[in-house]
Length: 208
Image (cartoon, rainbow, N blue to C red; front, side):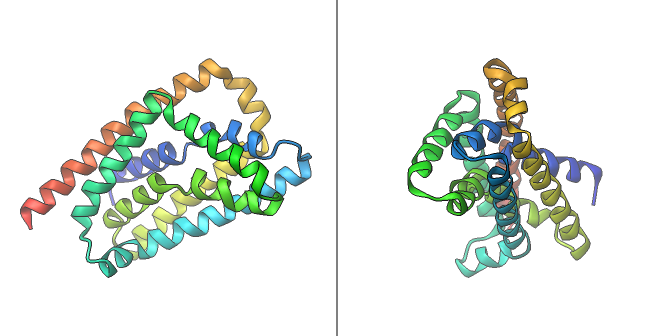
């Protein structure tokens, strides 16, 4: 397992999960809750999202095989999906869509339900992050590699949990301008990684 592979996994998962970008959404979803209730929601959402990630990290390729989908084909599809997410990030469409999802949940779910939807799914463990996890699981093929991938997932989910706990400070620190700059910068990085996923998938399909 190379250092480049580890860095690629960390960057890809960090960008797709986007802990800083989730801070204002967490505040919107938990509006009206006190600090204790917000802490409970943050912990519950983080645990659920981590479990979802672990399932797809360990059994992602098996799930694909059940539907007759090859990993190279999923690399191309997943890369295109990640590129679309990157496009939305650069042009600030992803944040708006997530905010609309959060607003709908406030009126429909109670404190415990909010942790499941929309915080854990789809804001944390969304299609892009799940796709990235399955794609990376193909590169982290050995048992030791999978442990490393799960450790990376745990670290980023733990970071997201920490962001939830200090969401008010993060929102104030970044501000509207800072959040816009960070989101667009991460979008550009993700677009390059997405293109690489597509290129690797096409190369593997041709070789097969």
